Amino acid sequence: MFPNANLSLRKFFMNTLIFILLVVSCTDDFNSCYSNNTMATIYPTAEACEQAMIPSTKKFASYGQQIFAQCTKLYTIPHRQEINLIWSVTNRGNFLLQSQNISHNMSTENETDVLTTSSPPLLPSPS
Image (tube, rainbow, N blue to C red; front, side, top):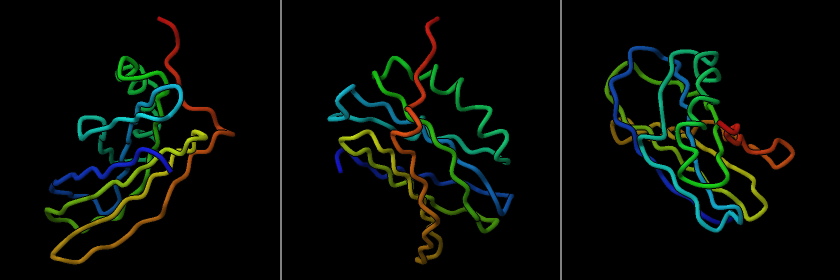
């Protein structure tokens, strides 16, 4: 696997189920990828998260040539906690995303989402 990163979000959550949209930008050859906390947004529903995917890819289109966007669900405990998003992009363009809740020195891993090259990366439409 090639570029990967951890993103850490510290929030106070009221809902026990949230959806996080992560946007990652890569060069055409996938040798350099980028994301940060401004490219991760929390939504209360899967529908809201999915509806934000296209506008988010357009917003970050200037960051690189290949734009990946993925919604992942997370079960939370209704108090302040930290969430780690662990992502990587392979040299074949597979986008892998894993989330992890961290609360009171306990860690809970959530399911891993994989976006493969059979589903092409979301590219911004020409303006």
